[in-house]
Amino acid sequence: MWLQASSTLEFYIETPTPFLLMLRPRSGMQQWIAREEYVLSPSVPAVEFTDSFGNLCQRLVAPAGHFTIRTSVEIETADASDSAPGAPFVDIQKLPNDTLPFLHPSRYCDSDHFTEMASSIVVGLAPGYDQCCAIVDYIRRAIEYTPGQGEQNISASQVNEAGRGVCRDMAHLGIACCRALAIPARMVVGYLEGLEPMDLHAWFEAYVGDRWYTFDPTQANLLGGRVAVAFGRDAADVAIYTQFGPPVELLDLKVQVTKTSEPIN
Image 1 (tube, rainbow, N blue to C red):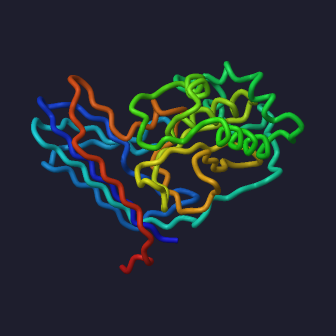
Image 2: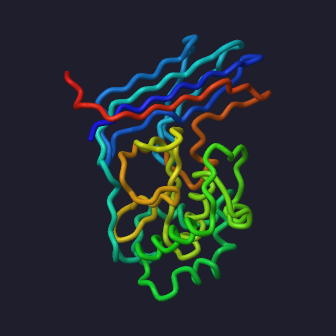
């Protein structure tokens, strides 16, 4: 399917402020970008680089006053994420090197605290994909999904204790439980067609079988086109914007995802 996904961020800035942005998806195995637009208003010089996880990042200094970032992308993606019941656990010694950073505890995914709990959730299941599904089922039962109510990042342990959270929090808990079972797991931030209420979205991927698979504790199934913008160990790696210096005011964040026809050249 073809999607058009867009975001608009409006800031008010007191003094010139350095920003690090992560707002450009890139083409990959499961998505292909046909067109994109990235507009800064007022226009300022920006430098793009690729971080250690393969994300496209932009550096700039925003001027004082009102500053707006508008992005839009026309992209081809599947209308549902792949599933693979029974896909096996991959022995550590056979994992690709680039999956290894996603085995360790990280700032918001304190997987070393979940060894016993994760093991109890997956009792009787074959190691691999089916264990990941059991973890997702646990999160859906135990954690109340509260979109729009997560102002601060909290750890997976705090999410599990609170019993409620936003998509980011539920992804952290899923990642921590997978890593506790020695399954590589990473966070993804992007767009989901049909998300209610519409916003930027977070989910996680786990490496089982021979590839990464999508898991989303906030959704009843894997239907809907997804656009991955950034991958990382947790929310600290995939912030859509990071500003340095005195705090700035985010006046508005608008996200829109719509189905569209194939672009015409």
